[in-house]
Length: 237
Image (cartoon, rainbow, N blue to C red; front, side, top):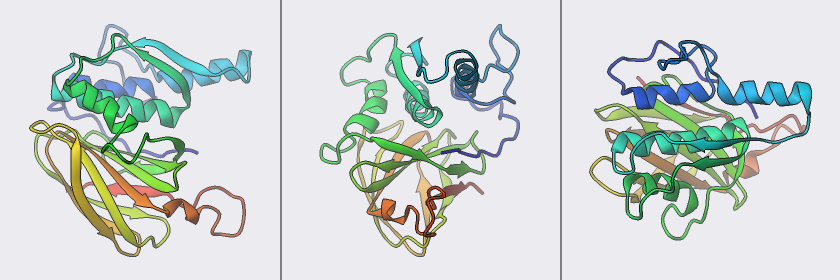
């Protein structure tokens, strides 16, 4: 399913490592490397494959977004994994595996074993919009375990208050798992959604996984197989 993101020029206060994840997908982002032009790597690969050998999957066979222990590297790695999923990469190989107990390992654990009981984040990417991707990245997955999982990445050096909405009036309790610059990945309580909305305060430089059980039952609630009606949006003031 398609995701829509609203862009504005990247803030130069945002570290290059966090800005450069847009090399993977954004046709308006001019690479700040020696390339000096838009890369749009994954959609570009998809178009090439569709034109010349349709049906073949795409993969990134070597990548690295920074050292194992920095918070910006951990945030970049976590968002890169979300982008790989959204853009349909079949496989991606980091050079090299992160050190045990490192911050970048937290980024992988966010998807593979968020709190020791939820299990891996697997499923189908669904529409999710952030009003400012340079401050907060937002992604959503319809989980195979019957949950809607929303991933939020606050790249700012300050807290960010966001207003999260879903296209249908979902009501329920969503659990949170989070890592920050000061703390490793751990459960971070819960929040209640009312009529499909919730306000969240995201800590500075943090990654948050929000899991809402049974939200995937909203698929096809329009009585037509026209796609998911669970389109999420995160508004950053």
